[in-house]
Image (cartoon, rainbow, N blue to C red):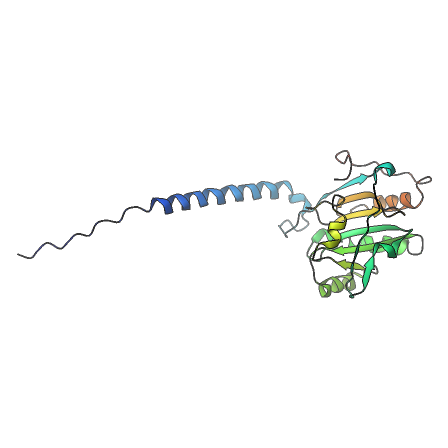
Length: 226
């Protein structure tokens, strides 16, 4: 009679692994649910209907009363051609600062309108400056050439210029456009695509001559810059 083969003990369930997998699955489901909710809420902000790695604002306009504008913003950086650029270059002018990058669909959509306004104000005391928040110089330059952009853009991949505007720009919304008054203080902000160029036009004109130009009514949700 053959001896009965030795029975090996059955392995115990790996409870810790099971618990970890369950927790991971739950966390993943929760994360996906959160993303879905956020994407659904922001769906109309994406021109192509999909997530491109940015959150585009809704075009909210905020005007800052002159008494609340604080100190002038001082900044320095390097443009797409490797040339230095700073706030001193625009002393005494109204300056429109547009934060963008090439992969941002609303940025592409507003580019022709910004270029047209820039050309309209050339030699009239108002200038435009782009701030590319993500791309390398070659990509920023190719974008400008493709869209016929005549004004410079700072390549700000290290975030130094964004830091100079801390508290004045929305950290989650690209594009964001600021209007600086003649003293270099932020006078107005548009969070999201400039879909109505006439509004930006009015903000610029108002900063050039506050006494003679009516200003647009700020969006109710915008009580001030943050």
